[in-house]
Length: 196
Image (tube, helix red, strand yellow):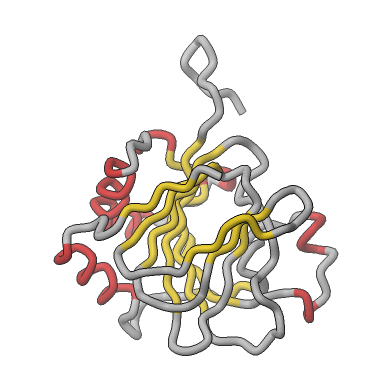
């Protein structure tokens, strides 16, 4: 599995500012029933009963597949996105999703949350971790065997092929905040435009 890790990816002043904003009590976090399927009424999500779901909180800033953009927060965080994407050599014009996730300790008896991919087409995922915590991220083979796990470190990003199935997990104490950026990795047609 090809996973690229970037340590101290944002300048310290940017990282501190970003953490202060997203941990401020006035920041608007929304409840989602399952961390892997926010806003997606897929068959897989609809088949889950409440005991199989892993609730968390999220802030959807950009979701191009659903024509959603929170203009205020997108503009406020644009420099963060650009710095992360440029560091990872990802094209800002192909950004499909920007979503923050807030995970709290939960006693589910499960090692990780639901296994998923963020999109059903080729994409690259950049996960940026805001704080140190033990809410590992896991990657899986086609038989649901764990092939890699990563323990989040503050101001660290990991980049990987989004078609590799993965799962978050909740921290045992405190909280975990991550930023998930998805970048379209489909080949660009000869005419230069992706058609819906």
